[in-house]
Amino acid sequence: MNEAKVEEKQVIGKTKLTKELEEILPPTHVSTDMYDIEATSGDLSLLSKYHYKFKKEYQATHVVRPGTTEELSNVMKKCKEYSIPMTIRAAGSSCYSSSTPTNGGVIIDMRRMDKIYEIDANNKTVRCGAGISWLRLIEALLEYGLGPKCYPTSYKSSCVGGFVVTSGKVGIGVLKNGIMKDAIKSLVFVKPDGSVETISRTSQGDLTLDDIIGSFGIFGAVAEVELEVTSLNTSIEMAGYGFKTFKMAAEFFRTLKNNDAHKPFFLSLSDKSFEKYAHWTYPARAFFVYAVYSDDPSATSQSVSFAKDAASKLDGLPVEDWYLKEKFRDIADTEVNVGRWCQNLVFQEYWVSDNRIEDFYNFYMEKTSRQRYRNAFYLMSGAKGGNRIKLFGLSDIKDSREFFGIKAVFNDITINNYENKDSLYTLGVVNTFYFLRFNPERAEYLMNLKNKIDPEDLVNSYRLVKAKMRTWRVGLLFWIAKRLYRTA
Ligand SMILES: Cc1cc2nc3c(=O)[nH]c(=O)nc-3n(C[C@H](O)[C@H](O)[C@H](O)COP(=O)(O)OP(=O)(O)OC[C@H]3O[C@@H](n4cnc5c(N)ncnc54)[C@H](O)[C@@H]3O)c2cc1C
Image 1 (tube, protein in one colour):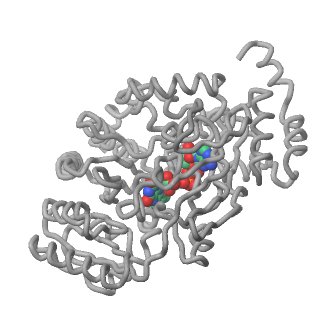
Image 2 (cartoon, rainbow, N blue to C red; image 1 turned 120 degrees about the vertical axis):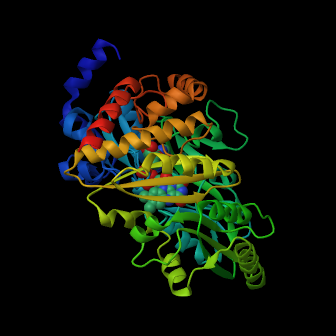
Image 3 (cartoon, rainbow, N blue to C red; image 1 turned 90 degrees about the horizontal axis):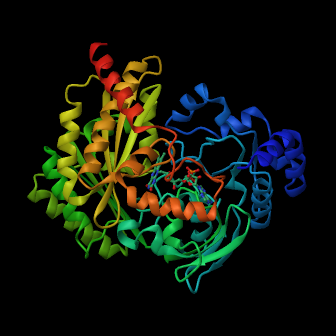
């Protein structure tokens, strides 16, 4: 930014910007209230709380809630005119400060862009605003006997646009119907300068669907989404088995995952601690695999029988019906429930290939077996080949040694995972330095594109292409943390 622009930005001041934004949006949807700003700045990982404690200038000055693509475009044009940073935010459920401001400016809360423009039941498509929650979309499609092909287990709050840009590779429906990218027909996209473009699978412009998926919003905002949807199945059933060893559980998991005749609608693997923290009660055995099947009644029951046969060959013990009911009911809350047990839930999410699940687990055990903190392990299947593993550390907010000690363990596991050609699942602001270090080629590609589309780095800065943290500083911090935690 040149000096004149810096000066201009300072002169504009909060009030002038507020007034100009109020000309674009209904004034009730332009807020400078500090509680409103706080409520749209944090996430479950609590990391943004640490950031703002030390770096007040990261915090935004405004929250705006556009309701249409035109309003969104005009807000972005205005911010661009004055070089004001913008942070795009939906439900904030992706964590790691993904939708958290890092550069001041304006938070663009997408959740008013929640209209359904068209449901075409014959062609099985829907066109809606990107800020609609999955739950609302599911309810609207239900009227037509339709459902989304895939969606995250956070569907109660998280929004369609949030799943698109965080990659949408894992969740409900992905194994049976494909990942988010497969379901997208087109997107209406607003670039950092406010220009609006429709991007489909065949688009040849500056940005392709591949660039936007997994972009964490660095290239602009998804305003509208056109999706392929699917007919609802007439039956749904959950199967659950407990195993004595991780090896057996992982083998069973892969057997279910890779059987094309009986594709699960949802599939997970968890350890006993996860069951204990995530539910009110928990069954015996050390490891658990849960599969949801959904099809017509006869196909569903054949799939459940297939799971039963496969489990018996690996000494799998069926989970009682009453617990399966609780499990099924809790599918959307299970990860959040772990937070009930502590004041400061620390977690990290990894993308791990099918054939490396055991190696990952063994390394995790090696790193945590002598640690005192309470932990939990949860794996959710992605489409063929990959999985999201979420590690939890239950920490006390007053015990910062423990907090940093857990982060140091996660750091070792992250490095080991990248060295074995796997990666982190969610990047956001706080994990970007790993991405830059271990994926330099992809980072360079994204950086070149970012320079072209958003040369001032106004939209969602410090994600994927530029890090707030330095690798050596983080390394030093964790080195010290490990020693302090051990002596605590
Ligand atoms: C309990 C729980 C369960 C989860 N289950 C899953 C799961 O099954 N699968 C999975 O993949 N993830 C899962 N997640 C992670 C998270 O919920 C998903 O990534 C979700 O899709 C994020 O949506 P959101 O609306 O909360 O987006 P946010 O967290 O608000 O935003 C995520 C990122 O997208 C950007 N963004 C949001 N909307 C737009 C837009 N319209 N245009 C451009 N950029 C945008 C933001 O700037 C940010 O970088 C889970 C999280 C929790 C807490």
